Length: 63
Image 1 (cartoon, one colour):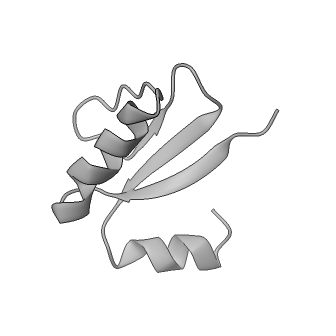
Image 2: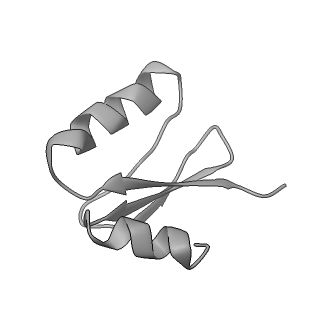
């Protein structure tokens, strides 16, 4: 099964809200300290922590 991949701001005003949303729907993510990628423990999901300016490039590249 392939994993859903999402990009979240590494830091900034949307980071906390994004992570809270995932937690509120029951997705458990152990993002550790300064990791650029984390995998959900209970859902086929990878979270990429990126700078705002990098998110569009990752989408264009199909990451």
